[in-house]
Image (cartoon, rainbow, N blue to C red; front, side, top):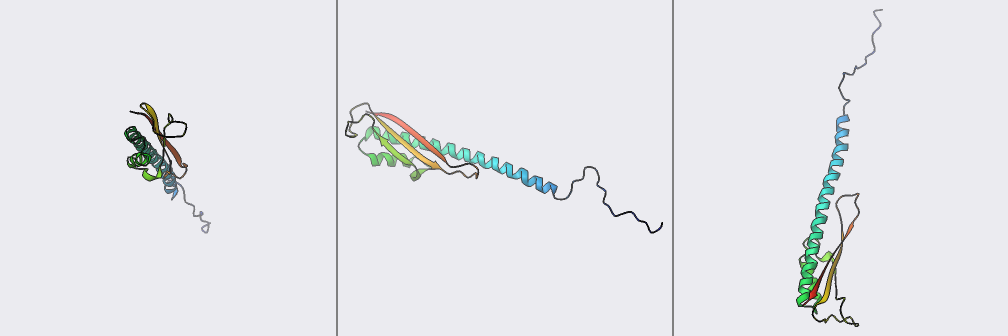
Length: 141
């Protein structure tokens, strides 16, 4: 009986975790937290882009009130105020109350509509690109 030995088995102590399990759990949690963080950053960027687009079309409409015949100037004034988007936005100018030939020479209180659209690319990989639309309507005086 002196030749019998117990097998060399490691006995787990209560509360001890196997090696590497903590790193795997940390990697799973940290990836989820980064996804939430970048989602918050993308939402903030999207809100800022919409706010600057709304400000840009409002400035374009204000310029159109004084200069209704200068479509290029209206578009340039609108795009100059769009800080994050800029030239990527498609700005359109419309005078819905113009005559049947589409002439923008309108009398007092004729409406001018300046609208901008843009495809906004987000940084979060699971969220697709978002289309932003901003519009402003004013009356020519």
